[in-house]
Length: 185
Ligand code: GRF
Image (cartoon, rainbow, N blue to C red; front, top):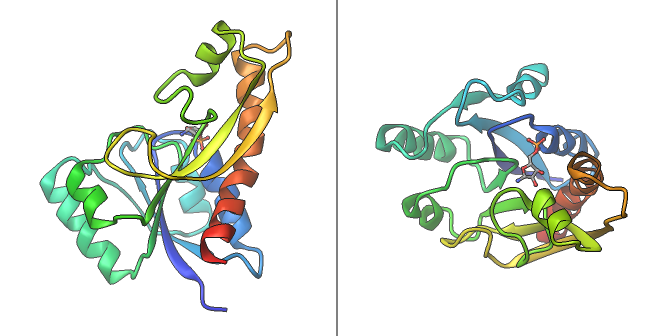
């Protein structure tokens, strides 16, 4: 099986990246993680790139020089899909147009509810009974691209931000891999 080549963009702990790398070790998973970009060298997730010997770079994709470097590299490496995994920067239009329909993101809410930040905190404050995660294509509007897959979880009365985050993230790891399987099926 010929696998598509993927680039994952991170900013933080990289647990979704870790889950994607794990899935990519399964024999029938449709992508390989060939490149990892972080916008900050402080991103803990970089350790997964090092651990698995995956090429990685720290780039500011809002700077023209870094963006041009990235475009060249992506072409050279024949990357065909870009996965945002906790990437906390807004991508500029040039980037999104260049990779139109080839960028996907995972978001910790049932979109279109709770776009943006602090999704767990806001869901609890609003006494929601249900939340979850969404994998979607990235377009020029924040957290608004076409939905690929959603997974739901119930918010229990005893849940707080931390317990909710743990439950949603556990679902995210499966949701992201399942979405990628769906895209290439
Ligand atoms: C995830 O909850 C994801 O939904 C959001 O950012 C978080 C990243 O976590 N976009 P990690 O860096 O993958 O651990």
